[in-house]
Length: 462
Image 1 (cartoon, rainbow, N blue to C red):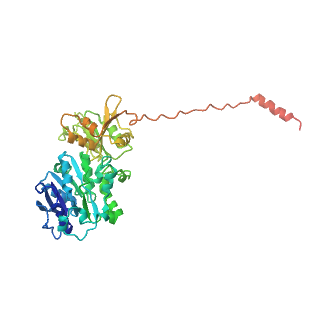
Image 2 (image 1 turned 45 degrees about the vertical axis):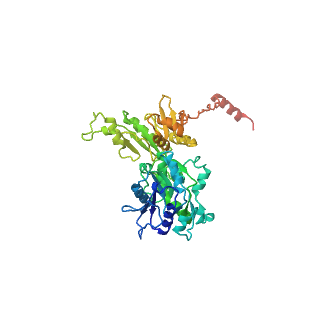
Image 3 (image 1 turned 180 degrees about the horizontal axis):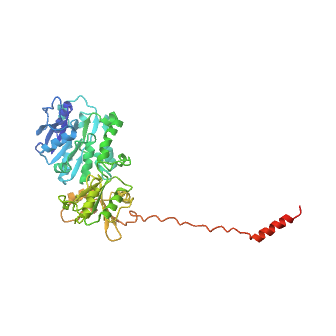
């Protein structure tokens, strides 16, 4: 276990953090602690009371929590990375409680609990000697984290639709290989970096496991308690661009976002430009426009060393490339990636069956009801179109053994559903029948009768 602690100043609180780690029930020889000094002035020093295997790592390039955590993770030797803040005091069983789950399998993220307390006049020696947190901290007046309430309401995350929400730091543990596989924390995310990282973990297919025995206290109240309105506003731009599942943050019509909601993958090999053009226009003109279109074809076959001739064997392919070359919502690749991460959904279907304006919206609505992993639409000609959940694909890749089909694995972990196409490709609305009323019949009097009637009227006595 490698405990990575990013620190920027706060020596007094860090001393208590390290004292608590020195008293852990987890074996000393299986744990190292890396304190990452993120440009502190004066520099961080290691106190007398600290775990046996404690190292101080200085940040030389970059700044911020994400960069500091990444720096520590790169220097770590442990199989498991434990993320802990420099103002957290963990109970004696904290590391052991989170580490034990990782003996079960290698794709778990274990989450510790925390409460917020005002820092009392306590020494590192007292923290080290305390058997329980309640001996040195007033837990009766502690402010509970919303994390614990969410975990309780969702039966330990078993009923949570988006369990990554509770993995917001500053205490969670995961395999080092998984940490690096998803790219670590993003230094460009100045606010909400833990939430964004946890979202990418979810797309990778991990299972989040909270452990109520991994208790800790956070010294001081979080920024949200001091100015919640500004704290929420400050984090919104980062999460809106990077977490498509936060639909509440993407209400602005016509916007383009860093990470799309759906990747639409179309195989255009041996297809005419006219067919592909119709498919792309239908995909980009749907009710759901938070998408990117990936055209899979042998683009690398195109030879630009020669002039484009009308007799070119790759005429249609070259025409398509030139047509979509400057459209940021259309990507040209030779082979589709195993997973569309970080986009949460991927659509795959025949290129000659253009999407209806409501297709994607209705497919997502369908799978979100029960969080199914794959929705397969059986088309009339025997082919299929499918919507895939990225987290389900990620889990299948983690569980793949080379023998079972990915859909067989997803059927067990998330569910695979088949549906007919009628709802997703509705028939064009028939115009209302128009009833044309019969023409009005106007009786026309013959001229001779009109003349006779006028004569009689003139001869009638007054």
